[in-house]
Amino acid sequence: MAAAVGLLDGGATVPFIARYRKEATGGLDDGQLRTLAERLQYLRELDERRAAVLASIREQGKLTDELRAALLSADTKSRVEDIYLPYKPKRRTKAQIAREAGLEPLADRLLSDPGLVPEAAAAAFVCADVGDAADVAAALEGARHIMVERAAEDAELVGAIREKFWAQGTLGSAPWSQDVAKSAAAQNFRDYFGFSESLQTMPSHRVLAVLRGEKEKILALTFDGGADDGYEAMVAASLGVDLSADVSAKAATPWLAATVRFAWRTRLMSSAAVDARIRLRQRAEQQAVAVFAKNLTHLLLAAPAGARTTLGLDPGFRTGVKVAVVDPTGKVVDTCAIYPHQPQRQWDLAKATLAALVARHSVELIAVGNGTASRETDTLAAELINDIRAAGARHSPRRW
Image 1: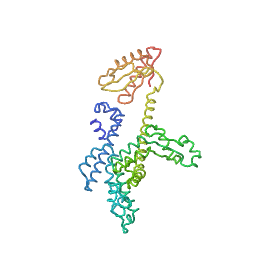
Image 2: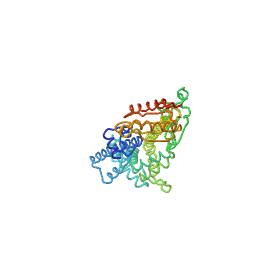
Image 3: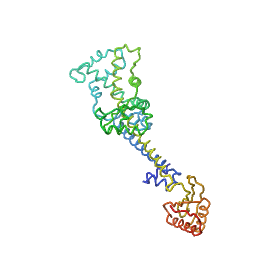
Image 4: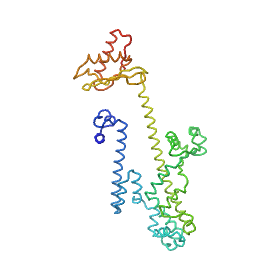
């Protein structure tokens, strides 16, 4: 593994390493090497981003041992960004403006004592000179924005909602508009008018089809995470809001419940939907590439000259020419190595070995690989065929 990483860092390509550095990598094939290269790039980008986040939080003077440990243990870019979100420099938000207006204590009071009457509690924070706390309604609105931002910047909550949405969500599609639905171009997508399917089971071809329809403004897509109750319960738990029936009679509970609902629908639902869209596209593209690769592999491995017994020659000088015979079904029936070239120069012995294989297996084609010693090996094959014909054989193989 370390040798493969070193070769990649040195500028070697995956095909080159797979073909010419098998001894160094322990025989890793191109698929394994490509996966390694992609994972290596991801982990290095993750480390770079983690270092940048640590530096940013350290400059703010907010880096604690717990925060450093959380960032160092984060194993995905999404997790790093979730942790960084509360410390990320950003434009002044409504919550920040509300804090500047002195409304954070109001939010804390309502969360800690749901028995308070929201309007009465907010009255103590009203200040006619401060626009964001000019009246009771403005003060409560500011407190709500503070709570919503707390929920939206809770890394554990954001991560849990993201996974729940991905596991339970569905993707729906409908015509972009009624006029578009009647157009000729839209008829290619008519199967997706009123369509809905689980994110977990939706196959790649349907994902790519609806995304293409959206790009062409023929389909409108909607991501649905399921019933809101479960998500709202998660938001309430993050904020410390008790929505159970025995506290529903408390004065602030309806206002807190509305705040929880507002946080889910305006901030957390949209972020979960965006993440689900990204993951769905990435999975679909990976699956599509895998299907294409599988089909292409079958095409490339198909017998180009039909079902015929073939003798294959992999040219080489010092290590010899590797020989394999496959029957019409592609099964390997014989293998050996010959050394017609320098330094061994066993030309006649090599021809005799090949002639015996041709006779034993009724070889119809001889295929010579391209590479080192290919011209010399092709000359050997041509001479072998001429000798077989000169000997009066009824059937002689052809070079391919």
